[in-house]
Length: 144
Image 1 (cartoon, one colour):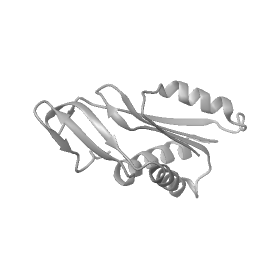
Image 2 (cartoon, rainbow, N blue to C red):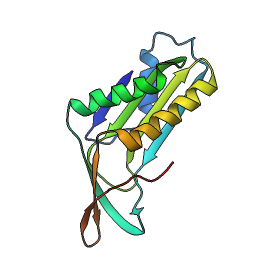
Image 3 (cartoon, helix red, strand yellow):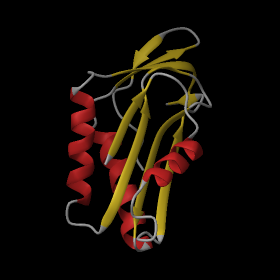
Image 4 (cartoon, rainbow, N blue to C red):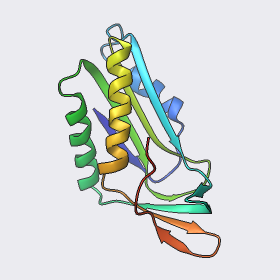
């Protein structure tokens, strides 16, 4: 499992290619499922100009690792990659990449979706949005 938190923007497709290049089971996977989450410029009917995504270094990475393991422990998944932005983020920036490799598509699709949903609802991140006239903490995530 590869978990990486980033303070700077990243290219999800380069991250996938780099991960695949370093894998020692290149012939073993027949499916790669990918989710890329990008910051919108709106939330709850308001225009959002930027967001600060806060976390606890060390603890957040361990929790992401645990959550991914929880999803994949009984699944025939070969590898998981999660790259997540932290810090100041702007509309159009990629925030999260979840990529799952497995021999068959069902395990890859199911695990990718489950990891993304569990990250949205249980990962220890705190979001503070900057609106045109004020700041606000995000109290709930949008549903999948």
